[in-house]
Length: 236
Image (tube, rainbow, N blue to C red; front, side, top):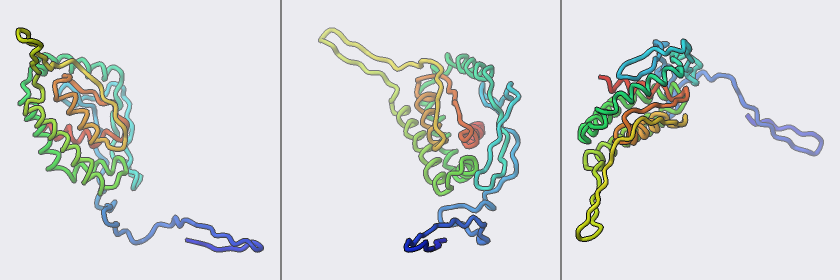
């Protein structure tokens, strides 16, 4: 609303923001309707490592809030230092067998994740929108889509010989060769604005491509819901 007033010879314009809720709740193109997106309060979201869901030993949780409605989504377990140590120990235990896993097996696992992400694109995008406040028009066409694209790229890279070493002839009677071997456990730290996309990129390059045997995601609150949904999908 634009208001005009005069003080002496000075003309002044003041912009007033109308904060009264509008009755017309029809969503704009590319947006979403809170009524359509609404969900009941979900069961607590726990930790996941060592191949199964784990209860945090901290005894603490934080609450994820849908910023479009201020409604609570779920209470999420907060990992303690002991939980992190347990996850690292689990990854270290898996190292011998995982580091010996053939590249083609890694590729198949990645392609399974690609399939699940694309099949559940809108479902995961909805969770990310509710958890982070990002528009559904972006999460449904960018976040999940590009996350699947990254997974597919590395699946093809690994399956097509991307983990092969190189052989070089130094001179007529001397050859050298290189190998790509697993190094160990690594940790990933990501920002809030593309939770699933960044998670997928770090998950690919570290966990699947012979650089390590386990992946620990140091997450901000807004990363937990959609990334956990991807974990849930990989277990089916």
